[in-house]
Length: 431
Image (tube, rainbow, N blue to C red):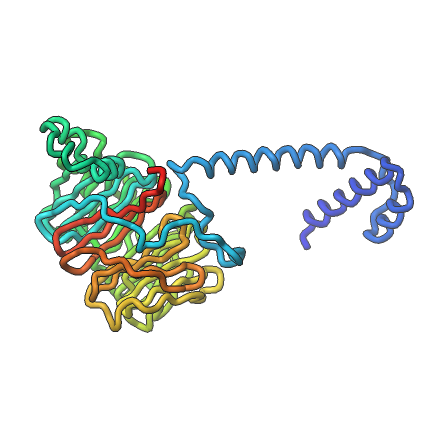
């Protein structure tokens, strides 16, 4: 026990003895002083009572502030997220995947390969092999699906334009768009492509088509993730070395130790919410945890999926766990503090996958979702006990290459090689 802790404890014992003397419990004060080896030179005092009242008042105010934050569904997802240390008998209120319905379909001119949600869940972006990017408004998609066909048919061209869910279409890449991410607090969208460039779009301007900044890379981009502050962009490419870019200056940083890096192309990266960690995975079969400040690798889960390519990684909301998927068609939940795989979600597909896709949490982290490559249906498990739920037929005419779930509401987007992106949503009875 450190000197500071000993001093604090001694001061606490003196306060207790002073309070007991003040309240008239002299014999108790004497016995306590002997038990904790504290001299009985403390004057009677009501100080401990005053400190306790102040502490209780401050604690009550903190709980009220937390309740207010939790009630703001526009910025904080409902529920507390997965925490296996405390989740003994959790009542799941979120809908399982089989209850979702298609609310809107948008089509590209080539296979749809990438998607991302804005942090507030209001916008979603899709990217395609045709090199285009679409930004869609979630409220407009829901309104469109709820409007009777007769009313839609009688809309004027002006009304159709004002209510159209696709609010921006961006053209600045010349090859397939492979990765997308929204800036956490500005109206900016980052994209990566097989044309070896990273583009930054300011979509606050209605007429925007081109990026305001372009970063040239040496390899094609596979994945990217904004730092929670929005000042940095983590980029994984066909090359094993992870890059970190300053968004304002485009300056590039890499780990000072080459041995930290993967030995194969980087397939996914993500920052945790507090930004003190980020995670990456690779075709080399490993998952790596990195220090978000020093940019150094602090842990490696070797052969995380029995040596198969790891296709996706995602932090839980509390940053205690990492959810991964591999080409072995297995999904795993890893506990960061012990470097152990706690849960394996099985039953998706009968063999190895041919193409990459992702495993994702739903918005409350009650369920884990994963598209089956062979059947184009969506597998769903209870995140805490790995119990299989009902399958959802995704309605695509080709394999699903990307799935992303809303961070705030019961909605997700699936992107397929049939050129389409489908928006799925579970309406409540009050919608």
